[in-house]
Image (tube, rainbow over all chains, first blue to last red; front, side, top):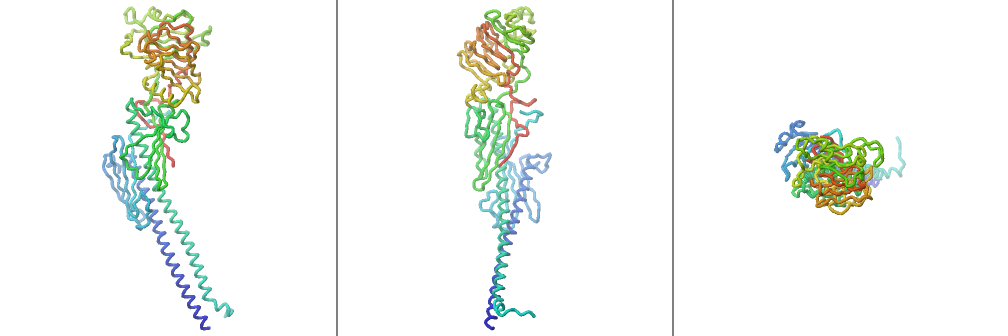
Amino acid sequence: MNTSRGLTLIEALVAAAVLGLGILSATTLAMHSLNAGAASHQQITALALANNAVECWRSGPTLCPASAALSTGGDSQSSTTLSGTAYTVRSGVTPTAYAKLQAIQVTVSWRPVSNNTGSSNDNAMAPGSGQLVIRTRVASVPVFVSSTSP
Amino acid sequence: MITQPPGLRHHQGAITLLMVILLVLLASMVGLFTARAVWTERLASNHSVWHAQAQYTAEAALETALTVLEVTLSDPANSLWTSHESAQCAAGFTGIEWQCRGLSLDSGWDTQGHTVQVRVMRDVVRAPHVALVLAEARHAANHAAAQVQQSLYMPTIAPIGVTHKSAPLLTQGCVSEAVAGSTRFCAPNASSCGGSGQNVGTAIHSLFAPDTDGNGLISLAEQQACLNVSAASLQGGGWVTPSTALPTPNPANCDSAVWRTVFGATTPAQIQALSQAQALKGLSASTSPARSVYWIDSPNEWNQSLGSSSTPVLLVFSVTACASQCPRISPSTKIVGTVFLDTQCQDSRATNWHSGTVTGQVAMASGLPNLQAGSQLQWLANHRQAFDWPWPSGIDAQRVQRVRGSWRSGS
């Protein structure tokens, strides 16, 4: 009878330890998942902001007053907070070897949720830096508008 | 009070342990699947960024290519279309009519690790003035790729305009035949050529007739003196010259009004380049599509029948071919389309010429003295089809312009 009680106690202790380890692992996994999910959200949000900045620049100062500085070759910077994360969007226009071709660079930076959630071969975003860089170019070759086309 | 069997009471701890282990295993599986789902989302967001990066790089390549083309094509002596690189033809553009080139972009461009390829393609038969520019960016490590394309109008040729004349023979001087009644000039509405049908319209149109009396006007007598063709040969068709005197064409500085009338602002160099491009692609009368433009530098007699009423051709006998006298077209040869003789305002270069049978239009930058017996010229309304490419109205054909609505993207 006494031996049986001792075995039950030991089994209960082992069960508690296993349960504790399981809960610890699950909590760690959950935290990593939450961080990874939040990092993905930040990255997608940053991409959307970068897209907006490029389209703003392409649409010109008439449709997008924020691009006025860019149209004269200057830089533009703005900050916004979305879902608790502060994003800084910097846009800059640089000349190219061709007079009628301009290069634009949009950099979106933010404070990442965790420093170890970035991908190691992610060239668009430095690992853990919370930065997204978009580069493109726009030429001033006109579009011919006519009622007939070949 | 419920009493457990003695055997089961001894295993209460083990059962609890097993239950806990099962619960922990279950929780771990749920956690792992959740983590996997989150990781997949992370990968998806990374790929979204990489794809966007590739897309912007491809767009940058396309814009750079458009600028390079604009600069290149502004030089009339450019060599963009003097060669063909079959490896640069994209899938679906491998037909014999497609001329393809790879385009090199400036090296000082940060492509963010992407490999960039730009290809330019055009149809040398149906639309040699429209190029399809295809730009592709690829990042091997990220497994990301994007492709964008845009069509362009190029100043490789020019619209013909509305200056053309509806006559089977267009000259810049007087016309005569070697033997009266031995040739045929059939007007646009001729019901039969060589027969006795009703003929209405102009059979010969000359942009110049000499003002022999110097009164500033071209009288009927002067017209008749300039046109030495029998009524039988004219097939009832009319004869048109300017009513007022024009400066005599100067062979030393020949201003070919006939060229402008037929080809508009398109230059001889552009027609020659197009002919060379079609030859480069291996196009001939027997290919599909058939070759449509022939620039001829040889002084030898032409004896190849070409063209049909649905696919007329253009033959230009160049200044080189006509250096002493323009090559004759052999009597048994039939040409359907347009024949131009670059006689440089010198009647002597077209003297004693033989046209064979031309259905369409013969034009020359001089008069046509002593046309040989058996020559037959009959009007064909669509004779310009070989070089009347579809331009939108109102376009400035001297510059590179994007074709509206032609931008496409894809991965």
